[in-house]
Length: 168
Image 1 (cartoon, one colour):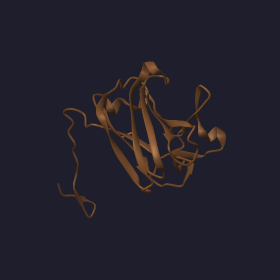
Image 2 (spheres, rainbow, N blue to C red):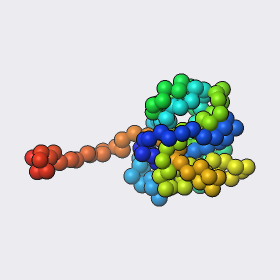
Image 3 (spheres, rainbow, N blue to C red):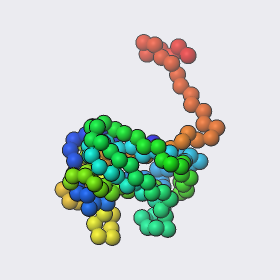
């Protein structure tokens, strides 16, 4: 999963005119090589529609756009996960951008959590440039996530403990 938050909703920010999102740098994607992006998740603080765009490249442009899909939200005040209409292959040697634009609702559609101390966790588009919202006195991380499929031939191993002793 691509997650830059601690799960705690703090406030809402922004306006319907904003493009906002998160970026997962290629250096952090090695674990996800061979997987597909399967869903997006957002904290549902907004009664309206979100359009998600997913890009795979060094910058956000039409050449790197791999998927666009819109979902309606109902202000349920909980995280909601939306399965994409198709699973998306991506190149794990290039950045992943999950961008969002809202419509048909009130202002302040961006769900905010505690700042994750990661400038890629709270990007907004100003003109033609994507910047961390902290520059504009918005010290939050967006409550926006993406999930992948499990890698092929992936084996999960674990130890079972009781009273701090391994029992299996």
